[in-house]
Every structure is written in C-alpha cells, then in structure tokens.
Length: 191
Figure 1 (cartoon, rainbow, N blue to C red):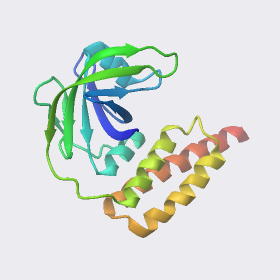
Figure 2: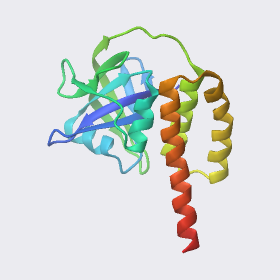
Figure 3: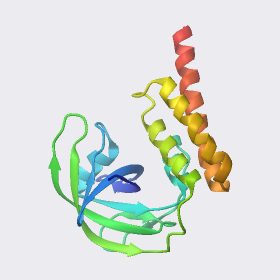
Figure 4: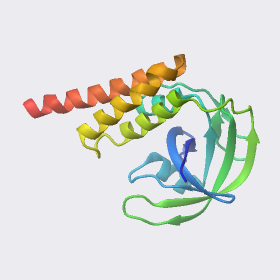
C-alpha cells in the first residue's frame, strides 16, 4: 500500500526541499523511493534524515509540483529539519539503509518521533482527484498525452461534484501545468 505524503529534507547548507511522495510502511520503517536524480534523494543521503508530514490540504501537493508555495514550515521537534505548519501529523525519520537501484533506490527510514497535531476530518473525493492528478503531473514526461488527458477528464467529475475552495485552487494549478506542458511540446513540434 502506498500513502501520499509530503517529505521535507535539507541539504548540507540547510536549504529545505518540500516534495510530495508516495511512501510505504513496514511497521516503524518508512520506505521512500525517489526517482534519480532527485533533490530528496541527495538530501537524505547527505544528511541521513527527513521529515514526513501528513496533510489534507491538497494545495501543498499541487504547489510543490507547480512552483507555488502553498505552505509554511515549522522546525521539527527532535531532529534537525522542518515539517508543514498545517499538517495532521508529522514523523521525524532517520536513514537506516539504501536499497540501490538504477532508477528508483529505496530509502529505508526509521521512525524516531511522531506527533499528531489535529484530527482527520474524513475523506473527500475531490482531494483524492487532486492527488491522482498530481501523480500524473509528476510523470508528464513519462506518460502518453492521451492517458493523462483521459484520466484528467474522469477525475474532473469528482472535482465538479465535491471540491471546496482549496481543491479548486490546487486543481487549477495542476491543469495549468498540464496545459502549459503540452502547449510547449506542441510548439516545439512545430519548430
């Protein structure tokens, strides 16, 4: 099972990187599998730590993929790092081991500290649709255009029926990213 989260990592100079990541859990171990190259990958290898934030504001996922900062950060409690200020919970992790792979190494992270900040209000279909579209946006260069467009069209149904203001804003950011990506592609094909 894969859980969609936000991972914050830092480089050796203390610069923070915020990225959406699907993670897996094996007991108290979290597995993060970033594609190469990845700032998250290089930061975790360099510092041996990361912070996982669990949030229901899908603008954070969309913002990280579209260069729109839709979040504030607070210092982690026990490890040097940062968490989302507006999150349901956060987990502070240290690197146990790296399972090498040419495309997607698996970083096995040990839970060091967990804090629950606010209750989970429940599932919303529009939030799930935004997360699905965010995954597609993160793979625009790997997926065929017709697949992305047909999935987008299907996901639009949940947006139309159940979205609130946050979900509508996140959806607009992601659809702009898709439209701009394909417009640039079509423009380069004409040149």
